[in-house]
Image 1: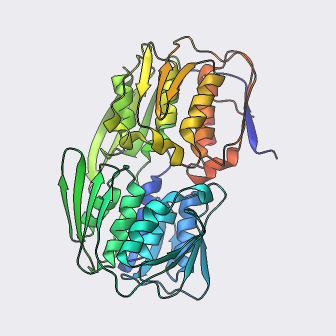
Image 2: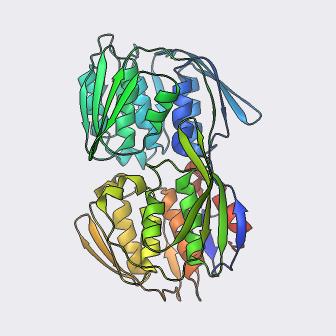
Image 3: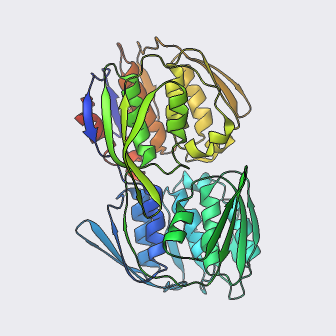
Length: 443
């Protein structure tokens, strides 16, 4: 079977309640921290995507016992640096940048060389932003370039560091935080605000951490060598996966959707903040706090008067994975939408900013670009009335899913062929099935 789909029709109106894929960021972090805890942790509702399965497969290879019983994964940890690593161990991160960067932070004391590899897409991404601070801890790291494969050999003489993270990368910040666990003394981090799942998990596990929020940075201090106990955790739904159905509902006539039990962590809901500023109808219901994370149902209605936005750059980090969808909404808005300082988009699974600009031009939307800033000239009457063939982009799941939402929202006549449907297995294997539940006809 070809690795592509064909969409011939715009989706009809719908009024549905759905559940989306579990949060990938929380799934990976929960598994990795369970591997360092003392005792058996129980993690329910883990996202069983390729990225998370790569994480589970890798910790098993590093000597951690992990079994699935019903909807729960039982992970037996032996405390900090509790891996049992064999000679010539190679772990494959697949397409997961989150796992690849975070696992390096947990290998800072390994007494045997571990080789980290990834797929073609991940192997093109820059890892120097995490390998350089790890070297400051005293870790030995070898790579021919700034990318994978990487060989890491830990040190018995780690020293705490002062680390500046000024790009808004939660992956880099979290990797340093995990390295600090095995390091004596206090590691200090000054970081641009970004996803704070790792901080919340540290607090829940009573790992010594101090956080002071400033206007532009968070100041984080971590006391190393604190052993923590096993824990139970239930993974909620993912806001990034929800974003595609939020957009589809906004763009679909007379439609309404309720997305149940989604993580609405304030560092992750930039997409909601931005779309509400564009006059889109989104609200939260049934809010609750679960182990530091805020969870809610998201209710969305079709929006008839979408307006352009001059998007504040401070929202970039909290919407970094959702900008492809935001651009799609801007394409249908009345007026001009401006977005600035989006260079981080080109450091994802594919050069997403480049792809987004080309994609919108393919839809005959006027886009102006200057370096990492773009302006999108919205067209409230946007229609696809021709045949489009959207080819694969280094297995980028979000490009594939954005293409599906565009096709289901804008087709009037013609067809859209979208390649690389298997890319969704990295983060959201049930994506197409949910679209079909909403009435999409996909061949």
